[in-house]
Amino acid sequence: MHLRSARRLRWVFALLLALALAAPAAGAAGTATAAPPSSVRLSGNVPGWVTKATRLGPADAGETVQFSLWLRFRNEAQLRRLLAQGGGAHLGFDAFMQQYGPSAADYQAVQDWLTGQGFRIVRTVPNRLYVKAEGSVAQVEQAFHLRLDRYQLPRVRVGGTTYTDVIFRANSQDPAVPAALAGIVDAVSGLDDAPYYQPQVAQPADQPTLADSIPCGSQGITDRPCHYEPAQLRHGYGVDRIPYDGTGTTIVIVDAYGSATAAQDLADFSRRYGLPPADLQVIQPFGTAHLPPQNPHFANQQGWAAEIGLDLQWAHAMAPGAKLVLLASPNNQRDLDEAVNWAVVHDLGDVISLSWGLPEYFMSPATARADERIFMEAAAQGISIQNSSGDSGDEVINLGVPSADWPTTSPYVTSVGGTSLFLDPQNLFGFETSWGTTIRGWTPGGQPFDWGFVFGGGGGVSHIFPQPSWQTVPRSLSQGMRAVPDVSMDADPYTGVPVNIAGTYYVYGGTSLSCPLFSGVMALADQAAGRRLGQAAPLLYPLAGSTSLRDVTPRDTSGLSVTFTGAATGNTYVVGFGQDSSLQVRNGWDEATGLGSPWVPALVQALAR
Image (cartoon, rainbow, N blue to C red):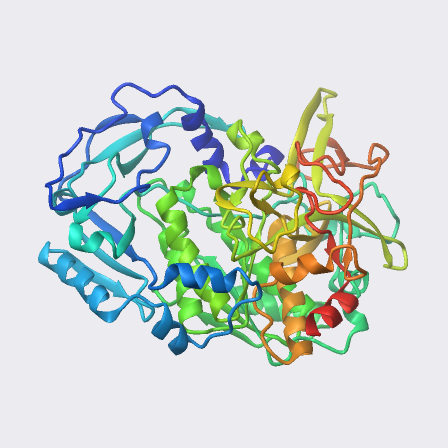
């Protein structure tokens, strides 16, 4: 894969960029449909890209639509006040439902209305947070008093490839529901069929295998891409200095599509690097993986296979005694959110690691509110959720405007950003910079190129959620909103790691690396404490400036570079470090690296206390 393709595994965001920046196209809005006086329209349920796309005409009336109605919690304001204290409430599922879960009567009322409209109930859930149903386009239009149309995205060139005639279904009006349900139901998801989440993985130029790379730290800055092996990262972060391995804890990895070779890949990785065999359980709660019949290039199965290998193998490297659960969603759309809910409801583990996302810029407020309740319940049950902060810096490279990513901006999720890690030849910690890769070079024929900023750790401030009370970040930086990341670890693919995919080892990075690394650290801390510690972020901010967290401070990175010739293309690449789009490293918290990186011995001890 050409580097410009490798750096854009999430090319859908750049494609949506064209929508966000283009003037509204003719025919963009669908025909408005009136709602009867007895109905109430739910706010924030129209995808933002719809008004920028070209409306082609009505969707096929007989097309099947799967959608979900999301309910509000009872006593929601009280729950938010409880969680504002930080660390979670450590309620059991039954206690949570008794105090905050939607009532059985309300849940039944939603189902009765759906079946009364002729819809088939596809899924109900024990926490009564949503009802999934399906019906035809005609049924949806009649029940929700709206129109579903087909929209064409403009011609877009990404990574050297031109995509045309990309067509999605969507609504241009908010759905209306009976007034009796308006205080119960807050969101309707699934009316549009645009794809959502993408894995936060990144590779060096020319997708090097292990044979094209050498261990980092062995020769300092090298003439080849380098990688860190498990023993090196464990030593660099001090994991090998503590008597904990995660025994008695469970880390849940939630990813899309699954991987037929995941278990064998993990077993081979463990043998190769001297790790104990992993205790792995694979669950596909909603059935096996499938490719959407339309626009199959969005599925990005190879990206998800790499994501799964990266998550499992490196969470295991950090906490080899922890049980691992791979929870595989059949797609990377709404089922991925629902898989997280499944993990929370069934109390699958103490720590949940999510290495995927999308720019918050494209989130509808209603969808964000629906997801937020999943994370709130996890926090209330003492479950720690980590999420990758993103791989495109401030997202200007994709959007033209700055945006932090979702779900990393949730106040109930710990946002894990990225650094470039430099160990010395003895694998002792040298220093870290923010992860921000720049590339220039020349082709075999001597033609120069300068790609500038290619990828880097995500960060910034939320457009949706206010700054939580526990986040001690100056308002001059947070603007009064949730600011990310909270903490960072190695994510640079040029200080990356080997990942086994079906027997071949490739070098990968991305905040999809830093997220499972820190999830492993939380498993170690849970073991040391002898209990679930709950959401990590509120526990980290009081430790700012202590030995538990190594602040990533400003430094001159102009002299840091790697020059090498790619095995696949013959291009010569000059790779620079520490220039993360507009995100700046500062003393103390910053939007490039958060509070810094963990020094695990001190952090585990502090958290266990």
